Image 1 (cartoon, rainbow, N blue to C red):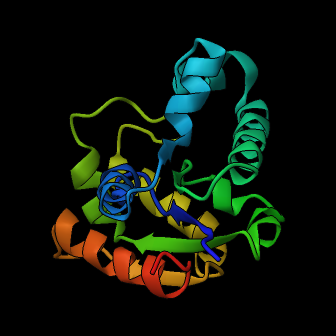
Image 2 (cartoon, rainbow, N blue to C red):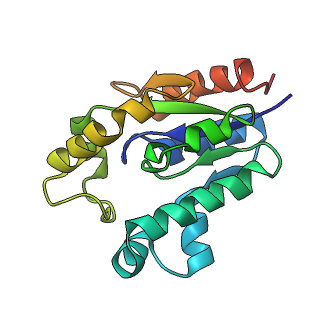
Length: 172
């Protein structure tokens, strides 16, 4: 039986880029959870953080992932903080395979340079991403599988995730 594939990791880990490639190769739907929340709320993620706070955003994120898990199996890319919430990984057991895209803070910061601002990162991207990793790493490591993105292109990472989807998530 096919299960959802959920990619998690630091901002800049490549969740969306890898997810799109994997979904295309599987012929599966791809859902970027942040983009869905922005469309549903009519606000950017930073604007939601500013106006409602992180806790409200995390509730929206958790609800969106739960709604997606009730649909046909797909590749999901929630924000990096989704998996750090207590209980969310446990809620996916049996319905999804969670994959941690492991990235060093320096690599993630380099990938984020020049992109839109992230609500939980400061001007010093390496320091901000390092702090997020310290806060979240235990939860990331509780995922079903880990794939390193270091010194690998997005196609290489997607290839490894594709193998996991076929082996662990039943995508044959």
